[in-house]
Length: 201
Image 1: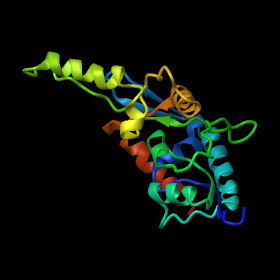
Image 2 (image 1 turned 90 degrees about the vertical axis):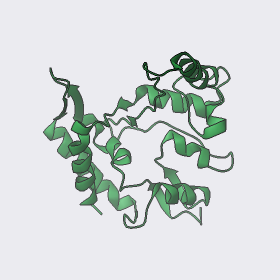
Image 3 (image 1 turned 90 degrees about the horizontal axis):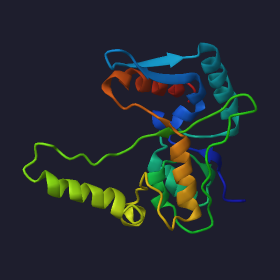
Image 4 (image 1 turned 120 degrees about the vertical axis):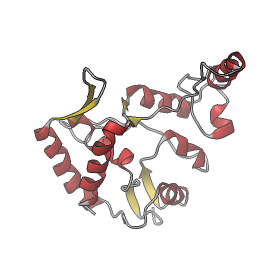
């Protein structure tokens, strides 16, 4: 189409969206003292980065200006053909003529996985009204699971009984994604990934 400027766009400054490109070469394991260890398959990691480098010839992302908001805006304006976004950003898409799909493999030999982060509702066991808090937590996470996206733009980890195709695909993508640690001991991994990807822009 005449208006299309980007074949694929994502926020390259956010390691969360860069992760799928190297996901098949990384694993997260907790040791005996519950410290997160990041293990790399160095050969596969280098293959992933080589593929990433070659693929950039098809993209024209400006790392100095791109943000999650600009990706959504470009997609809504028809400037972007495909976009890598998280499920919370689906609420920002306008119109009905778009589809949601799980990420494809990089190629015939390099698989890919998206990253999954889960927000929790936690009840303090020492709270004076913990029973009421627990009832509220159950209400917003289970009873209202089918209404969460419409009200706040967030999909529940529990599939709605009347889930449409978009929710079903988002849910399946979440189920197949790698639960990515956001803990302090995994911070170095995210910083390193962001620095590594930034070298290509």
